[in-house]
Length: 504
Ligand code: AHR
Image (cartoon, rainbow, N blue to C red):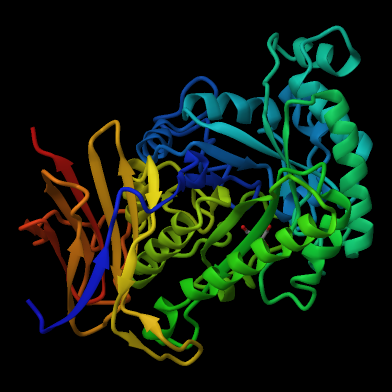
């Protein structure tokens, strides 16, 4: 054991933040790179079923217990004609896909994705094109997907072999419409008006849907957070969620600073909540706006190699970040941050799911394998279900290039009453010292540690490959319960999950 520093924490059954919406563990598949073609869909692959879905990938997706997957973009949706992706495959047009400057074959589309989602035990979160299109294409797509029958679009769906409606519940009103890179970028006023009118029409088609209004593309946008304030002036009463997107990188190789970036995510969430509540007050509204953090991850490793891609190729490797151990630790902290805000963050999507900035990678025709970031995502998704508790933390802190007072200890806590289980997720950001944490768990009498999973590695830059898993968790964590206290032993520079259960 390395030299240790001490911290304290109080966990109490009564300190409840919220019931966690399982959709906080959502993900994202965009028509981008090899996410669809060569990722989830590869008819020639030895494990492919009769629909062309790779079963090896489906198994890994199911392992993650992903509750909802956003589709079909991303930037791609802003110039997408959904009609290109339905009907007989041989009749579907090949198109120039402008967001990523590739050729889109449209061999996968709405219906196939719904089929795939069923096979993956997940729901679909559908995005509509508010870049080049608008009210009409959105309401038609919704009618095609959700209307039972007897109309042009719903009968067209039936004629395509889908008798029953897809009943897709969550819909994104466009994607990153503030971004200059977006085809059909809008000003806040233009977007607010268009999103409102689209939402109005979509609700007339199906009043049971939930809608996500586009927030800023990230917290560094010059128009953040006035974009949120101005667009919500229009969409507050018709939308259920506002979106947040954020990616982090470690371009300067400063690990201590990189691990602190979840504090930026924390500020981002707090600012969006404050802006939503300001509009709520201004409108004298009774309704709360919830947050859909529908793109989040680490993204920077592949930036340079992507500049070499030949334009208009089909499904080239794109945004194929190979993740390091330190990326996995930050991903753990990002999940902790969202859980601590689970009273407002109801949907979140790790971006993305397969091959493109993803926890799951594939070789065309070959293996599917787990990136380093698979692990914190897997454990938090599988064991982080129940009620989020607010941990009262007293931890030593450090300063880094961009952040001051960064606590070494970064936890989240989940209580599942039904299972009689208490789960502590904890990142130790200290690069040299273990953290020994005195955790007051008096309200959990009779609970004992059943498992302490640790993700640690001597090499911050360690990666996994198709043939070698250098970064994977072990269950030899040393935390224990003693005299009503949980003593959490979190090794230097690690991500942890300590699971306690009530003894009979
Ligand atoms: O996830 C990759 C891209 O990041 C998405 O297409 C876009 O919405 C964001 O800028």
